[in-house]
Length: 367
Image (cartoon, rainbow, N blue to C red; front, side):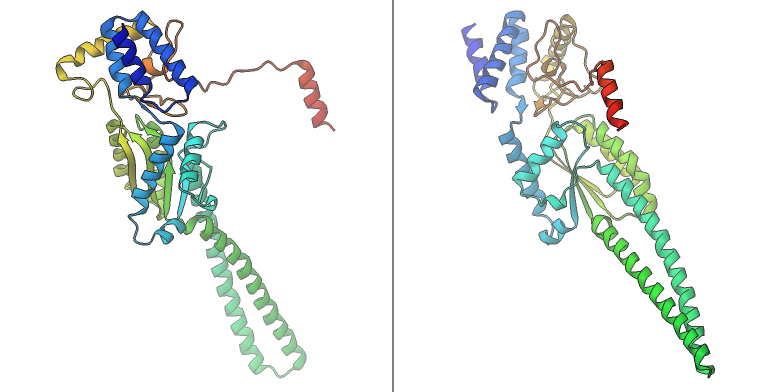
């Protein structure tokens, strides 16, 4: 017992936690120790000793390393940055891991806020495509109008040569002036639109997306499916760069399939490959892996822990929130089980609105 308690403390002290959180983790592990067999607890301790907890400090260090590794590759860093925009993988209505991770990355690397967008990258590319088509149509219409006006101006100038009547000449000159003025006004308005398009879209050659973990790869695959066809059909010249802390082999393969399908220009950079703890020769030797799998299944069954549909590669890592592909017993609670790094649930609780509140809202709207 004493030996296991010492090992328990050693494991918790591997993680960069404050005193309160360390004590909380120790208490959870003590409960595990009391309720599990020696073999079961020993296996969970082995798993926990390899668990990657990304504190704010460690996350900042990792993101700095990722940035430095990638930013050292371009021949001209200043040009590369001036042609790049940084995004979180997705924008959420609540402050959570995607936005927190992105903020950590931006601050530690001193990224110019003007080179960042807190919008979904897919929405940005959809807007790019929409602006491209609208402006393309406008440019074509303007070019046609310019061509017609130039022909009219040329004809009017030809008339001036042959007309001797001063009154008629002045009328023709006025028409020429008005045509040139209209042409100039159109050009100025169009220039502003094109300058804005260039600044917000066309000058951007690198979309750099920051995220925490690639687990199943579903989020990235969904994003790529959403924008892949549009990029391919409209010849939008932009490279997609995905920089993450950890990536699973399964997730990377799923993403690569979509990249190949849509012929996308994309690169992925990650700090570490995720560990699937239930795969042979990753954490446990081949001869023991079946026993480990059975023990994990048994703990899940006894405590009514149901693996997420995303839990296909049994990762062991956490930051602000545990990824949805984490080993279930590490991140899911039940009436009989306390998770070590619980995953925050995102289901919004419906609040009953009172008649008084509803009346006040109507009164405000009818002012």
